[in-house]
Image 1 (spheres, rainbow, N blue to C red):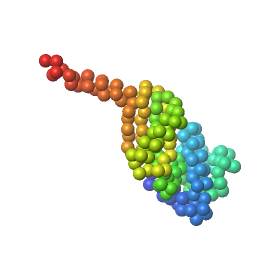
Image 2: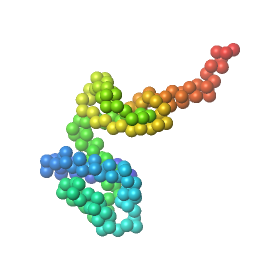
Image 3: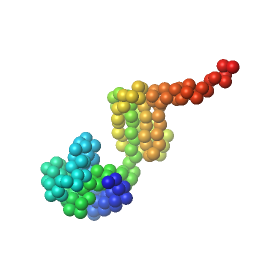
Image 4: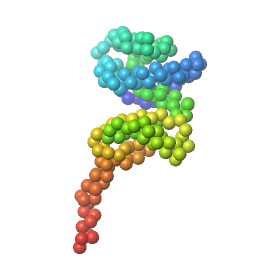
Length: 187
């Protein structure tokens, strides 16, 4: 089901159409809306991928969710996907469109994962440090909470991962004890 090449091609076609119609930003907002639906409602993704539900029914379900919330270009594109039997790839196409939009606008995504909610001041300080240490000026921040980190943070950006969490430190200490790295110093 996950076909990144297909999603990339459809996203490229949509972004090219949006450029012609001067609606790149509007369609990106629509794709972010579709992405948020797919992330927050796994049942919607299951409906899209179900071979039992007929395409006409899927189209009605999608229209009931998107009517009045997306523009005509995005709506027509989604209907085309349903007619071509590619609605199963809609979540991946939305993700691919957003990635291509970010590349087009030179926007870099930064994900900050913490053990608890992060203040805006701390978020801005982290973004400031990233801007100072890289050449990136347009940074889009996403935050997530994972209580198992205990403390600290994890940063993900451009395929790089910086893990400064308490959980990582505890795992490193556990590994050191399991490897018996200090036994030879006791003798």
